[in-house]
Image (cartoon, rainbow, N blue to C red; front, top):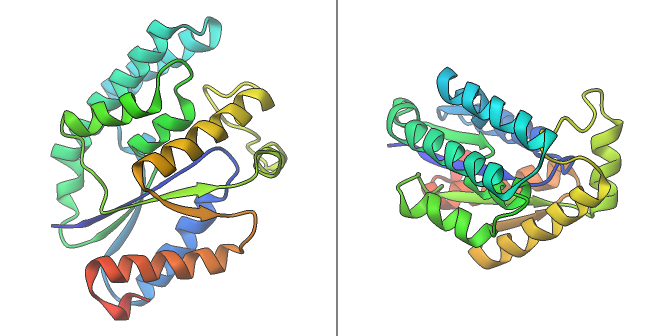
Length: 208
């Protein structure tokens, strides 16, 4: 068995930096730990389908396409739940994005129904879900200033980003995800909190 830790949030909130710091700290504890990215794990056929759906969504955003994306992601996550995640036996898995991110990127679907559908159909529920949040003005500035820029298949401008931030904040409160504010605390402070929470779940003080 492994311990699954999900990190989700809007663009530019600092997930990648946080995961890197947590990975470094947990690696120093000598406990097996891996940092994975959801999109990199999706099998090629499902990734190809998603690519075509994202392209269609960009050309003409519709409820039908948004639902098709949500269903394709759910199917991919079921594959990862059954065939990929179990291969990391005994490890702490730090996962960059999982079904909570549907609350950020689905434009026409309610986050509660989309998240609930993943859980109901058997997508693995993380042992801890960290909802990384930030003032949308700050995260937008961060996202658009970095080398890869916004790098989003769905978010097209600040208004989309703003609404995505509000949607995710509501979902985080509704589902009881661990909220981390990255606009008022440093990445090092957040990493310390995350490692402490993971240690509490695992009952291993030496993970801190």
